[in-house]
Length: 192
Image 1 (spheres, rainbow, N blue to C red):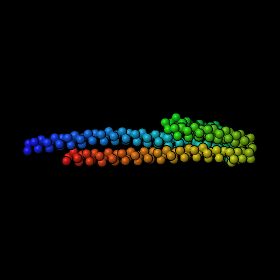
Image 2: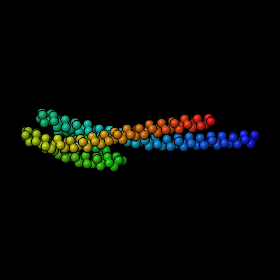
Image 3: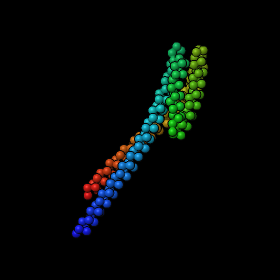
Image 4: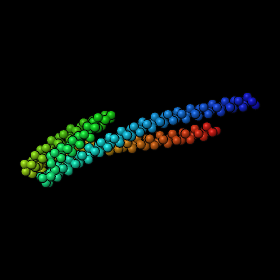
């Protein structure tokens, strides 16, 4: 009987030790996975914010251009350049990100934006020279399609990054859920 009691004690100690090791292992795994998911989500949210800023600044550029086209005395070239600099700053920040796809998108979008700005320079010059017919042609045939190309490039990637951020947050929630279940199971096994 004493041998049986000692054997049962050792088995119980061994079982408790295994539960303890499993609990520690699960905790380390969950912590590492949660940190990775949080980092991934933070990077995606940051990029999404930069794309949103670039999109907003690009909209300001288009608004200034429209305002100047409709009223020569409003929407100055210096305001246009300020908005363009803000767009470029956001795209340049994206260009320095860790994600190769985003770097490539930012690089190509900066080139599109440069072309758009060259066209706006021509448009403003035409407006300032009171060549409204030519300005309208440049606006319709060049500036509008170039604006659309830049905006599409920014918007589609912003949507992608928003989706990546949501997926990373879902992964974070799932990992936390698994961790909670593992702790519950280990606690129950520890009491058995």
